[in-house]
Length: 118
Length: 118
Length: 118
Image (tube, rainbow over all chains, first blue to last red; front, side, top):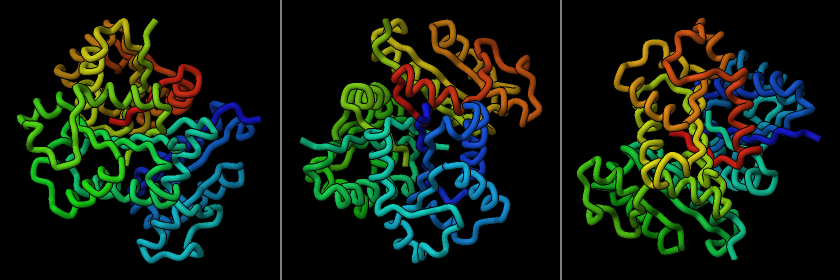
């Protein structure tokens, strides 16, 4: 069982903020002694989803490596619709949830996730 | 009894961030199945209060609709004073609290609110 | 025993955000009736650490006063290394932690700290 529960939140379409968030996760996994100790989620909503339409390879590779280590990357379907994006445009390793805001509340309330806004 | 407890925090005087926050609340209410399922607070402090001095009608209408649905909009009295604003300048549907930072801590600790920074 | 538990998070090297964070802490202590009622932490990671390399006196004085009142200011060692900074460059009153992200999660999960992103 993971002992660290955390949700990171991105709603700005800024590469800088995504980079900080990915580094946060990489550092957390290392500090925790490996991905098995971490239950981590990365929720993207609002204009933040635009960043994932044509994601630079540097970021898509890091995201996929983290997803394969068990980190949950999800994008908000409301935000995809508002930005005329199709889920098929998301990078490998990223799923969707109906409402990002509900996921952010649910993860904190039900799974006891700490919240981090990079 | 509401089952979703959340506090949104705004301290930037940026319309973009307010718009995201209002959309978050509108989406949350819809995803939750109506306002009765949501105990939601919107706390404005720091320079963020300046945005509410002459709030555009688009925002004041959405804020009032959410306030009438039971969302609690509050502005920090410390921040109003620091920006030479009077509570009477706030839009309809918005109240004040003595210290926004205390409200943000209290809502998380006492009411178990999830925290979201749009 | 302190009854208010809170962690503030800074990862932007922006004086404006640091100023808001320090004001948050000053207002919280006043609203709480003094520093004995507050268990507060200020965690700096990511590019935010760059701000502390040559911190303006206005900020270093306020930080030291808060540190002397019992507020815990810590910088992330990963971030210091990434920005070629030595802990000795940090202002008086500020310590380091191995991983800022782990500290942010730990404080929320283990000490029940409310999270604030100024």
